[in-house]
Amino acid sequence: MKIRTLCIAGAVAAAFLSFSAPATRAADMSSMSGIDYKPLIHPMWDYSDLQHAKTYGLTDSQVATVAKVSWMTGWSFDAVLAMVQRGESFGMISQKANLRLNDVMDSSEVESQIAAYKTAYEHSGKGAMMSGSM
Image (cartoon, rainbow, N blue to C red):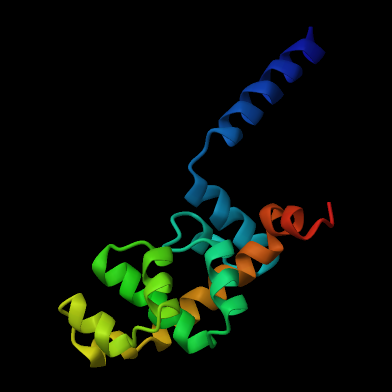
């Protein structure tokens, strides 16, 4: 009887944990590993988008600027990257989006957000699956 009660209690606890909010699980994982996994919850970009931009030859600063323009305009990361690939400058893109160039080019905060996202992604199960180490 006691074993059955413990099994039921364990199943209820496991079900509760599996349905807990992603932010709670990310916070729990962050406290255990020292890596902040919260940037993975609702990212403004996808890891493959960032890698594609780097493969194209953009610097970290340019990738961050593409991400910032995407965020400020609501355009997809891919759409902004395609503009850059067609040869449009960030000045032309900011003018098209009716944004101030200074606001677009100041992307240091986005660079740090991307770095935190990449660190969390590469140390999560998603990153391990993509690299084939699982």
